[in-house]
Length: 337
Ligand code: 5GP
Ligand code: MN
Image 1 (cartoon, rainbow, N blue to C red):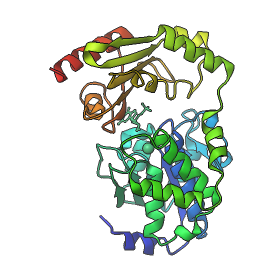
Image 2 (image 1 turned 135 degrees about the vertical axis):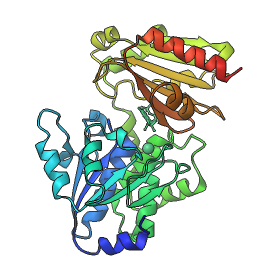
Image 3 (image 1 turned 90 degrees about the horizontal axis):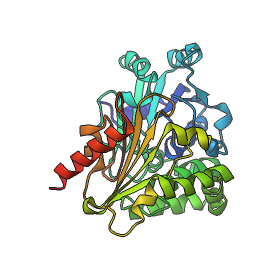
């Protein structure tokens, strides 16, 4: 394992850099990747952000979005070539190679050939990087990108473009500075980013005020029809079926944030969202909690996933939504006994 100085020396020459966010990148993954990319470009490195798959249109405002290369299963060679030609691979907002779909094996093949850097805040780290900046207490990967820049003594080089990317990651991963992961350091970093002249109010609008009428109607439907509470388990959960998907023409990102509505009810400490068949078969599950209950453990033990103590996700194949819900109930009854 290298220390920061070894990496810094390596980056003293202009390098070909590829930066990979996790699958279905959210604002933190994409913002971290793009923020880092703009920073590294200040040193004459050539950078490419390579995403394992597409991401919701409400992230298209991010500076650099137009240049992001999205891995294409049907035509993987451009992505393979980018990795082949890279000197260094940055992995941001994930720390296990099964979080980047088909790019995982490609990175693995290059483990001894290229410099690999991992910057992340998720539990369940794998050893694949030559240099790691890994802190599960960091509120966002974007916060760690800032720390990386600080280690590099480069915070004075953070411009509005970088600040917008990193601020977006911090805002979204902290639920607008609401979650317990927010430290005074998080707020200080946010203040530093604001000091670049960043219009943070405009940023909120770009991230949050982008509903379509259809999406808002879907929210009404989901709150009315798809939300169940188990008060005795302090739990509430949503189910979204293939029917809902067709009826409301749901797109990537349309269920973002939905799970949190269950947590806004008094006494509810655990929330879940079960989504039937999104881009793949099977069921995508999202978990959230308030307090000590670790949904990361729940997800890794029973739903093939992981994440953070209070926000995690996973996926189960070969069972119905009802069966996934039944599994959830059984596990909760055992864990909360
Ligand atoms: P979300 O519910 O918004 O998809 O994800 C919540 C958190 O759990 C995020 O930090 C995300 O990276 C993580 N997460 C979501 N799905 C998975 C998964 O399938 N595996 C793992 N390890 N983490 C996940
Ligand atoms: Mn994150």
